[in-house]
Amino acid sequence: MSHHSLRIRLVATTLLLLAIASALIAVATTISLRQFLIHRLDDDVRASSRILIRAELGSPPTLLLPPRGPRPPDTLTALVRDGTVVTASVSPFGEDPRPVPESEYPDLVSLPEGERPQSVDLGELGDYRLVATRTPIGDTVVSGLPLGPVEAIVTSLVLIELVVTGVTLGGAGVAAAMLVRRELRPLERVAATAARVSTLPLDRGEVSLVERVPDVDPDTEVGKVGSALNRMLDNVGSALEARHESEVQLRQFIADASHELRTPLAAISGYTELTRREELSADVEYSLTRIASQTERMTALVEDLLLLARLDAGRPLERGEVDLTRLVVDAVADAHAAGPDHRWQLDVPDQPVVVPGDGSRLAQVLANLLANARTHTPPGTNVTVALAVEPSSARLSVADDGPGISPDLLPHIFERFARGSASRSRDNGSTGLGLAIVRAVVAAHAGTVNATSKPGCTEFTVRLPRSGA
Ligand SMILES: Nc1ncnc2c1ncn2[C@@H]1O[C@H](COP(=O)(O)OP(=O)(O)O)[C@@H](O)[C@H]1O
Ligand SMILES: [Mg+2]
Image (cartoon, rainbow, N blue to C red):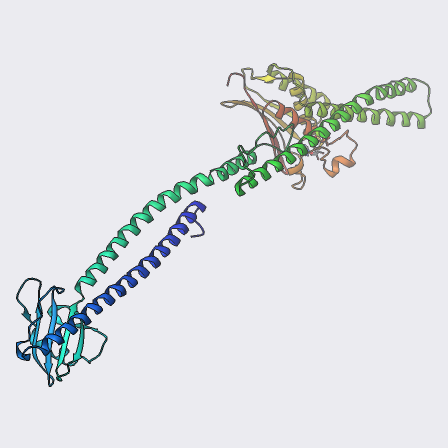
């Protein structure tokens, strides 16, 4: 039963207990009524026996007849003398006496004498309560009354009990089902609230946890569960608020810091440039070149950080119609200029592919992907940039036949500061933020990006929702 619902179990248990109680009451009632009736019958049997003996004493034994007067019907009277039945008859109400069949005589003869009547099965006459009494003249008088009426009363009582118990159980089942349903309704509300909360996106951003269990009555057990859940939701809600608060602060801090760093970096670049115009020794010249390149790298890093912080903050993007075909053609041209040793291939449809979005951000996505294909592969690598139209989106892919991304790195490739060990050591301006920016920009356009890679075939695929699609 444990795999049924609580409702079914409660109703079934109630009915089971009720059935057991009814059965106990019915059995006790039946047994005591039967005993009471037999007791009364026995009194009558003894009374009629006494009348019979008086009658026998006052009349010739062979003419023994049932005494007159008001007597219960079907009274059995018999006279046994010297172990043989002299006469035995049953007197129905208002009719002449009927003889007892001789086949039952042995039962009458073998009846022990005594005060207590006994139940004897008299064949076609049915069961009788019989008492045998010795008369002062030495005969044995047997007197008895049928058990039939008692059994009939008991049978009808049992029938009534069965019907009443059945009706009661049926009614109780319906009532219990309704009551239990009503009592469990608050529990269903608790479950529904918990289910709604479980589908809320609580993992990021600003979350307002307004779901609460309605109408909780803290005096009931179910109400206690409900109000405990509500208190827990209060608690979780304020924790989420605190988390969001600190996230916002951190983002703001990064954005501010990046912004503040731009000015001194620009100054360092400027002064480095100025100084390099002077006549300098080779050592100083070299140091300055290093300072210039490191400053450039730091500037790129700060720009990337600032961009990511702004994307995190959900800054609205510029919304316009962006011709992806143009962007791709321009980006490949730039990449070609920057990496003349790679073989660049272009595969775009004749019709312009237009998506809604922020042109300069999408140009950055392309630039980052192409820069990766250029900087993380050896010279001579083929890079194919393809643009295609799908039913509801535009698909942009950048594929190269370079050495590929290591399987350890691939699942984390879009995370911030995720870099291959080669990129870390090589001084190629690697920051590990390029693909994080790609993902953030694409996500801000409600698009998707994914990467597949094996040696000789690395492909980044970006899908962006199309205008009017
Ligand atoms: N086309 C590619 N071929 C091989 N490795 C790549 C390619 N694109 C990206 N990677 C790997 O992914 C890492 C993360 O890329 P990215 O986020 O752009 O950072 P970065 O280019 O600044 O290192 C790179 O360091 C590189 O190891
Ligand atoms: Mg990169």
